[in-house]
Amino acid sequence: MKHRRFAAAAVLGLALLAPAARAEDKAPWIHIKVTEGKDQATKVNVNLPLSLIDVALDVIKTDAVKDGRIQVEGTTITVAQMRRIWAELKKTGDADFADIQDGENTVKVAKKGERLVVEVKEGKAGKKTVYAELHQSVVDALLAGDGNSLDLKGAMAQLQTAQRGEIVRVDDNDNNVRVWID
Image (cartoon, rainbow, N blue to C red; front, side, top):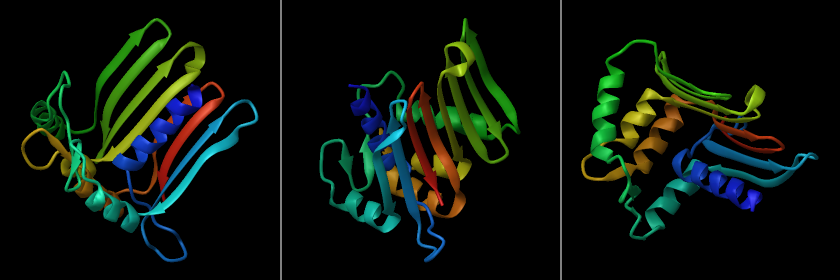
């Protein structure tokens, strides 16, 4: 059950956070690695060029994904509300927007330079953590347009030029997910 959850997280990371750059050809690539268990054996290891992701987004035709945009329905917060919140957050300088502590659990949301950072730690000594970092231009592109959809293709185009390094990391005891661009 756990490896399915981590595989789903990896696929979500793949869909939302596409490109990276290989040193030998400078073409953008994304890397997703999922490990599980005390031996940290790799369960999922995905390395894909952005061009493949871009083509896949053109090919996918579902109710949820059309023309490289993902439709967001039935959520407690609408994409329009996300856009308004993001517009206000962008006006600030570096800031810690939220630092929520509930017993041994913490959630932090901050803006550092041109990056939005979210960090969640659960349990003693942060045994379960989620870390995500996105460049402001990636969030701008993801929220571009109108209606109740997110622009995946636009976000990938920005990732290609604006971001390198780790984007998402999930550590849950002996299970880990890592998404990065290089």
